[in-house]
Amino acid sequence: MRRRSIDVRSLTCLPDQDRLAELAALLASGEVEVIIEKSYPLGEAAAAVTHMLGHHARGEIAITH
Image (cartoon, rainbow, N blue to C red; front, side, top):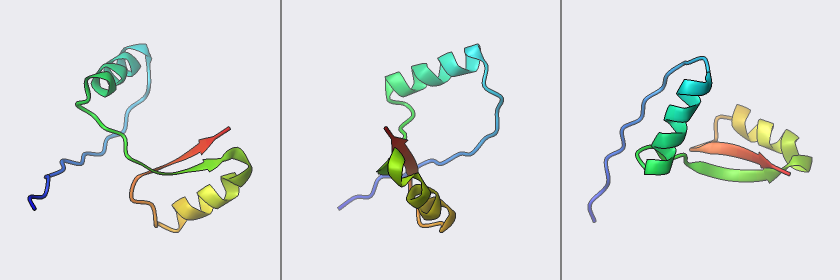
């Protein structure tokens, strides 16, 4: 089985309308993929924060309503 290579980059930016439009285009094209490891309902937000602070997350943690 061949493993897929992943290019991970981190950056800091200040959001503005132009940058958000660029990000939306990248997400829509599939060039950028957001990996959501786990979703928590709003009532379990404390558990989500505990999970995140415990450095157990392998993707993004989402809080839903």
